[in-house]
Picture (tube, rainbow, N blue to C red):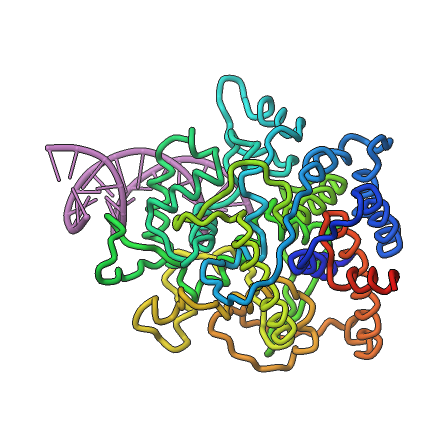
Length: 468
DNA sequence: TCGTGAGTAAACAATA
DNA sequence: ATATTGTTTACTCACG
């Protein structure tokens, strides 16, 4: 399964609008496995799901856990309908991508081996080692003694982006981190200092001028500098165990360089190799992806619902409804923009989020204040662009010669080197291949979604057709 | 070895 | 007066 497939699969999961309430879990599972086997014959994902579906299967433990025991026991998704209300002000890109679902408070009673890693492998003699072991997928709710594999800038970024208005006071940033990463509840107090230090020093973060009459107590609100947002996204994508990362891992099983194309004379850049210290086993990886796909729908959360600083329950129906509306909008934007927006390409970490003084981003039109540049209250078009970017690594191949300026995108100025292999493939043949793969992806996604109790448009159509 | 990013600690000023 | 917030400096460590 290619990277693009995974991303689209993930995208489709996020798009799933309704739930199939008529079908039993067993039959759904069977259907899923059959469909996946056809769609991705011999794929590891198919195998993993196969193991998940067979309660008494002979799959090894590594494959069974934790999906079969935790997530699917929690497959409960309230049927939601699309409302007329178009307000989506509290949505952030993370919620729209559902990426935060993966690090929301969740079940903590499974994944024994992870817990063991937590208990055993982190003690070096009398010294407590908070570094997360490289071979265990990180779960912030389980590995409460492991330091999150996210940098402070990523944590802050997630916190701010997870807020309804994409701006938070320091106090709420602390809270968000504490809520989502219990590790910090017992961590040495210096981490707050580090957060503040990061806010001050990292130019990705900006203070928002207080509105008159606004009483948020001491201090200012902090937001993400939109010019650097793509860089933070890129940094987050490179983070191990991020859902996106997992999908990318799955998509790139060989440690060979993969290239994608960027417009306007840029050379194809290798995707970041994912076989560093945090490499995990293929089986585990597949399982994580499947886990992620389920988590993406927020189905595995058993803990207390997370709330925004405005008190909004992220798990509430109204929130989900608005989320789905946003996703529909996102889908439209995705189609519209997929061939027009360059993606963020950075080769060095400093391009992701940097303390250095070089400000590439200010080339564009300057704004007098953050508020002018960053439309907190309205639906964020830029968000859609980034989602498109994140989900469509390959789609720019046809746009190599395009010249599309985008002030929110940093592209590394390198020479354009066409991949000779790709040049050999005619556009028509490629289209055919893409269509074929797209078909398979949709089938696989349908099956997966149905297993999770979610009915997609296409499966709904199929179902109707078969009934009639 | 060197440059850079990241984390940590600390000092200090400003502010609610 | 106190706690919190924001800024700055210095240092260490890891990594390429």
